[in-house]
Length: 204
Image 1 (cartoon, rainbow, N blue to C red):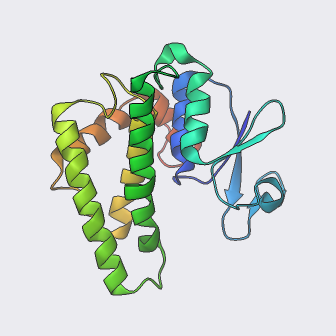
Image 2 (cartoon, one colour; image 1 turned 120 degrees about the horizontal axis):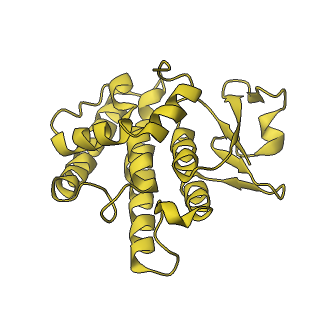
Image 3 (cartoon, one colour; image 1 turned 60 degrees about the vertical axis):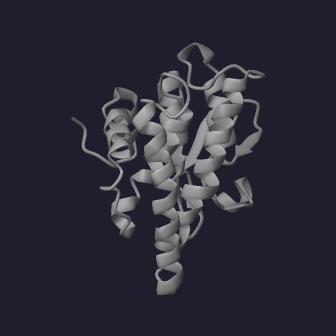
Protein backbone atom coordinates (compact mmCIF):
# COMPACT_ATOMS: atom_id res chain seq x y z
CA UNK A 1 0.00 0.00 0.00
CA UNK A 2 1.09 3.55 -0.64
CA UNK A 3 0.13 6.57 1.47
CA UNK A 4 0.25 10.01 -0.09
CA UNK A 5 1.06 12.40 2.73
CA UNK A 6 2.40 15.76 3.78
CA UNK A 7 4.54 15.91 6.94
CA UNK A 8 2.48 16.76 10.02
CA UNK A 9 -0.77 17.16 8.09
CA UNK A 10 -3.87 15.11 8.92
CA UNK A 11 -2.27 12.28 6.93
CA UNK A 12 -0.01 11.70 9.96
CA UNK A 13 -2.95 10.05 11.73
CA UNK A 14 -3.27 7.45 8.97
CA UNK A 15 0.49 6.91 9.04
CA UNK A 16 0.35 6.34 12.80
CA UNK A 17 -2.50 3.85 12.48
CA UNK A 18 -0.58 1.90 9.83
CA UNK A 19 2.47 1.81 12.07
CA UNK A 20 0.39 0.74 15.07
CA UNK A 21 -1.19 -2.00 12.94
CA UNK A 22 2.23 -3.26 11.87
CA UNK A 23 1.49 -2.73 8.18
CA UNK A 24 4.08 -2.22 5.45
CA UNK A 25 3.41 1.16 3.92
CA UNK A 26 5.16 3.02 1.12
CA UNK A 27 5.13 6.79 1.55
CA UNK A 28 4.92 9.36 -1.24
CA UNK A 29 5.23 12.97 -0.09
CA UNK A 30 2.94 15.51 -1.73
CA UNK A 31 3.94 19.11 -2.31
CA UNK A 32 0.68 20.84 -1.42
CA UNK A 33 1.71 24.05 -3.19
CA UNK A 34 2.12 22.63 -6.70
CA UNK A 35 0.45 19.22 -6.16
CA UNK A 36 3.51 17.27 -7.24
CA UNK A 37 4.62 14.09 -5.52
CA UNK A 38 8.11 13.04 -4.50
CA UNK A 39 7.81 10.22 -7.04
CA UNK A 40 7.36 12.81 -9.81
CA UNK A 41 3.62 12.57 -10.44
CA UNK A 42 0.88 15.17 -10.60
CA UNK A 43 -1.08 14.37 -7.46
CA UNK A 44 -4.29 15.68 -9.01
CA UNK A 45 -4.20 12.81 -11.48
CA UNK A 46 -4.14 10.44 -8.51
CA UNK A 47 -6.62 12.21 -6.26
CA UNK A 48 -8.76 14.84 -7.97
CA UNK A 49 -9.55 16.34 -4.57
CA UNK A 50 -5.90 17.36 -4.30
CA UNK A 51 -5.80 16.71 -0.57
CA UNK A 52 -4.00 14.25 1.68
CA UNK A 53 -4.25 11.58 2.84
CA UNK A 54 -4.89 9.25 -0.04
CA UNK A 55 -4.22 5.54 0.18
CA UNK A 56 -3.41 3.42 -2.85
CA UNK A 57 -4.55 -0.09 -1.98
CA UNK A 58 -2.72 -3.14 -3.28
CA UNK A 59 -5.51 -3.84 -5.79
CA UNK A 60 -4.91 -0.42 -7.36
CA UNK A 61 -7.95 1.32 -5.92
CA UNK A 62 -7.60 4.68 -4.20
CA UNK A 63 -9.18 5.44 -0.84
CA UNK A 64 -9.46 9.04 0.39
CA UNK A 65 -10.59 10.86 3.56
CA UNK A 66 -8.67 10.24 6.77
CA UNK A 67 -11.43 8.63 8.88
CA UNK A 68 -12.15 6.07 6.15
CA UNK A 69 -8.45 5.36 5.60
CA UNK A 70 -7.79 4.93 9.33
CA UNK A 71 -10.62 2.43 9.68
CA UNK A 72 -9.49 0.51 6.61
CA UNK A 73 -5.94 0.27 7.93
CA UNK A 74 -7.11 -0.73 11.40
CA UNK A 75 -9.26 -3.49 9.91
CA UNK A 76 -6.22 -5.02 8.17
CA UNK A 77 -4.98 -6.16 11.59
CA UNK A 78 -7.97 -6.28 13.93
CA UNK A 79 -5.97 -8.00 16.65
CA UNK A 80 -4.28 -4.67 17.42
CA UNK A 81 -7.64 -3.21 18.54
CA UNK A 82 -7.25 0.08 16.66
CA UNK A 83 -10.92 -0.08 15.65
CA UNK A 84 -13.65 -2.14 17.31
CA UNK A 85 -15.31 -4.86 15.26
CA UNK A 86 -17.75 -3.82 12.55
CA UNK A 87 -21.37 -4.02 13.62
CA UNK A 88 -20.69 -3.39 17.30
CA UNK A 89 -21.82 -0.30 19.17
CA UNK A 90 -18.17 0.35 19.99
CA UNK A 91 -17.44 0.69 16.26
CA UNK A 92 -20.12 3.32 15.96
CA UNK A 93 -18.63 5.09 18.97
CA UNK A 94 -15.33 5.21 17.11
CA UNK A 95 -17.07 6.63 14.04
CA UNK A 96 -18.86 9.13 16.25
CA UNK A 97 -15.55 10.35 17.66
CA UNK A 98 -13.79 10.40 14.28
CA UNK A 99 -16.68 12.44 12.89
CA UNK A 100 -16.53 14.87 15.80
CA UNK A 101 -12.79 15.39 15.43
CA UNK A 102 -13.12 15.81 11.67
CA UNK A 103 -15.95 18.34 11.65
CA UNK A 104 -15.64 20.13 15.00
CA UNK A 105 -11.88 20.19 15.61
CA UNK A 106 -9.93 19.53 12.40
CA UNK A 107 -12.03 21.84 10.23
CA UNK A 108 -11.96 24.60 12.86
CA UNK A 109 -8.20 24.77 12.39
CA UNK A 110 -8.41 25.30 8.63
CA UNK A 111 -9.06 29.09 8.69
CA UNK A 112 -6.19 29.56 11.14
CA UNK A 113 -3.63 28.39 8.59
CA UNK A 114 -4.73 30.90 5.94
CA UNK A 115 -2.81 34.20 6.21
CA UNK A 116 -5.71 36.21 4.78
CA UNK A 117 -8.31 34.98 7.27
CA UNK A 118 -10.05 38.02 8.85
CA UNK A 119 -9.35 38.54 12.54
CA UNK A 120 -13.04 38.08 13.38
CA UNK A 121 -13.14 34.68 11.67
CA UNK A 122 -9.89 33.69 13.37
CA UNK A 123 -11.32 34.66 16.77
CA UNK A 124 -14.52 32.72 16.10
CA UNK A 125 -12.55 29.62 15.10
CA UNK A 126 -10.40 29.74 18.22
CA UNK A 127 -13.45 30.24 20.43
CA UNK A 128 -15.15 27.25 18.78
CA UNK A 129 -12.05 25.14 19.31
CA UNK A 130 -11.94 26.10 22.97
CA UNK A 131 -15.54 24.90 23.36
CA UNK A 132 -14.84 21.59 21.65
CA UNK A 133 -11.65 21.04 23.63
CA UNK A 134 -13.69 21.60 26.78
CA UNK A 135 -15.89 18.64 25.81
CA UNK A 136 -12.88 16.50 24.95
CA UNK A 137 -11.12 17.41 28.18
CA UNK A 138 -14.14 16.33 30.20
CA UNK A 139 -14.23 13.02 28.34
CA UNK A 140 -10.50 12.43 28.84
CA UNK A 141 -10.64 13.35 32.52
CA UNK A 142 -12.93 10.34 32.95
CA UNK A 143 -11.37 7.95 30.41
CA UNK A 144 -7.72 7.47 29.47
CA UNK A 145 -8.61 7.07 25.79
CA UNK A 146 -11.31 8.51 23.55
CA UNK A 147 -13.01 5.19 22.75
CA UNK A 148 -12.98 2.18 25.04
CA UNK A 149 -10.11 1.36 27.35
CA UNK A 150 -7.17 1.44 24.95
CA UNK A 151 -5.57 3.42 22.12
CA UNK A 152 -7.57 3.59 18.87
CA UNK A 153 -7.54 5.47 15.59
CA UNK A 154 -9.47 8.30 17.27
CA UNK A 155 -6.55 9.00 19.59
CA UNK A 156 -4.15 9.09 16.63
CA UNK A 157 -6.41 11.61 14.89
CA UNK A 158 -6.83 13.91 17.88
CA UNK A 159 -3.08 13.77 18.58
CA UNK A 160 -2.38 14.85 15.00
CA UNK A 161 -4.68 17.87 15.00
CA UNK A 162 -3.59 18.87 18.50
CA UNK A 163 -0.06 19.22 17.17
CA UNK A 164 -1.22 22.20 15.13
CA UNK A 165 -2.31 24.25 18.14
CA UNK A 166 1.00 25.91 18.91
CA UNK A 167 1.54 26.90 15.28
CA UNK A 168 -1.69 28.87 15.01
CA UNK A 169 -2.14 30.37 18.45
CA UNK A 170 -4.54 27.90 20.05
CA UNK A 171 -3.83 27.60 23.79
CA UNK A 172 -4.33 24.07 25.09
CA UNK A 173 -3.10 24.80 28.63
CA UNK A 174 -6.67 25.03 30.03
CA UNK A 175 -7.20 21.39 29.03
CA UNK A 176 -4.89 19.20 31.15
CA UNK A 177 -6.56 15.93 30.20
CA UNK A 178 -6.10 16.71 26.49
CA UNK A 179 -2.44 17.50 27.12
CA UNK A 180 -2.04 14.28 29.10
CA UNK A 181 -3.44 12.32 26.14
CA UNK A 182 -1.00 14.14 23.89
CA UNK A 183 1.91 12.89 25.96
CA UNK A 184 0.57 9.33 26.17
CA UNK A 185 0.23 9.14 22.42
CA UNK A 186 3.59 10.77 21.72
CA UNK A 187 5.32 8.25 23.99
CA UNK A 188 4.14 5.31 21.88
CA UNK A 189 7.01 3.83 19.81
CA UNK A 190 4.90 3.53 16.64
CA UNK A 191 3.91 7.19 16.87
CA UNK A 192 7.51 8.30 17.24
CA UNK A 193 8.55 6.06 14.35
CA UNK A 194 5.95 7.69 12.09
CA UNK A 195 7.04 11.17 13.14
CA UNK A 196 10.70 10.35 12.55
CA UNK A 197 9.90 8.98 9.09
CA UNK A 198 8.06 12.21 8.24
CA UNK A 199 10.96 14.32 9.52
CA UNK A 200 8.88 15.85 12.33
CA UNK A 201 11.23 14.81 15.14
CA UNK A 202 14.85 13.70 15.10
CA UNK A 203 15.67 10.04 15.26
CA UNK A 204 16.36 9.13 18.86
